[in-house]
Amino acid sequence: MLIPKGALVVSCQARADNPLHGPVHMAAMARAAEAGGALGLRANGAEDVAAIRAVTALPIIGIAKVWDERFPVYITPGFAQAAGIAAAGADIVGLDATPRPRDGEPVERLIGRIRSELGKEVFADIATLDEGRAAHAHGATYVATTLSGYTEETASRKTKGPDLELLSALVAAVAAPIVAEGRFDTPELVAEAFRRGAHAVVVGTAITNPREITRKFVQATKS
Ligand SMILES: CC(=O)N[C@H](C=O)[C@@H](O)[C@H](O)[C@H](O)COP(=O)(O)O
Image 1: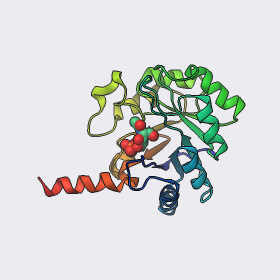
Image 2: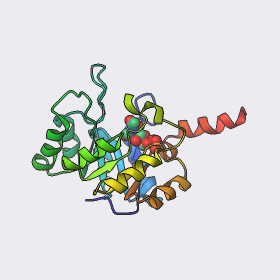
Image 3: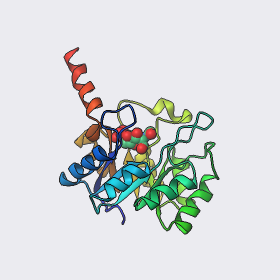
């Protein structure tokens, strides 16, 4: 299933150190997001994807994060991870589509194999306009601003807010549905992304991470 135009996609992820870690909490989070009007979901790991698949028919962007200090790429670095989340019920496979070193085949080959061998759409997380262009040329269905500010080359772009400039540049130059993701943490920023031509917007932390939301409020008690 594809992500409809104008969709709010909610990313339901909690790392191991987060009290909400685990498929039971993430499936509940996904149900809450759907009840609130989300038209798509993003989730990490086969367990969480399977638990979410069991409670919703919404399109799921599945990713599998693997941290390995030898490689900077951690979002679905190889075909084995992609196959795992596809088998768990993801409709779309999300992956790091930057040309950085990864534990696996080059990203262009990975995208091709996900499409031809798994029959899944590909959601390309990128950090620059050139990476967006390349991901589209390699056959990614969606191109998303997810990694802006999180790669060495773009570290200076990790401002408080999202990378709206990159979003606009991608919309102008890449003939694929462009998804706004990364630090879209207010309804106003979501509206701004759509004004700039985003196909969909993915929101994570601001909706599904109560620890971070609480920290923001606590900060206000100290200012
Ligand atoms: C850089 C990276 O690893 N981003 C991850 C990708 O899956 C997640 O940690 C983010 O929460 C997600 O992209 C949504 O963004 P935000 O939580 O800012 O709304």
